[in-house]
Image 1 (cartoon, helix red, strand yellow):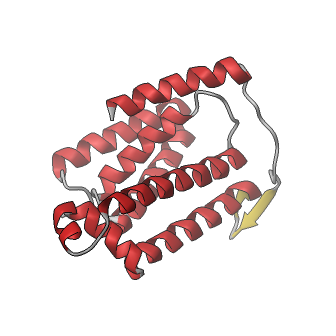
Image 2 (cartoon, helix red, strand yellow; image 1 turned 90 degrees about the vertical axis):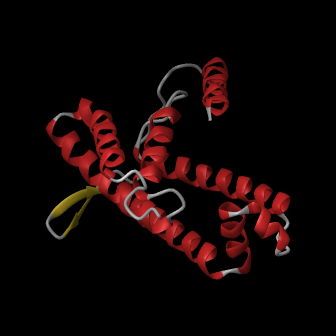
Length: 187
């Protein structure tokens, strides 16, 4: 994990060298939408819809397909999965590809609502790690619940004091690790 964070810093600095440190912002579907008396930007509603659709489809893929079951088996116990006929190297390569695909889709969705800059990835990476641990390692429904909980708390804290959102995430993370180290739906 430390090597990946080091690689993140290298990639960010290369991006700054290539594209510069300027923040690139544009307005895409930024008109207001009234949903039940609450007003949201249309791009955020669309982002939420696509994120929920992608998450649901990926959950169904992991839960219902043979390849999804092979991926879960390889994640839980690679040696036993290999004995049952799962090609572990192929599954790991597919998981890497799926991870890159999800990161690309997530970045695309984030770019609809937030300004783009070369160093924007670290904050989202930290939030993703907190969501995974919050939900319980290996629990997809737990990650959905953890992400929803973190998003709600982040919105409330941002409304009160925008600079403390990341601090609130860390506080929730520490409290959960003290109260239930396995996460919300972890085993």
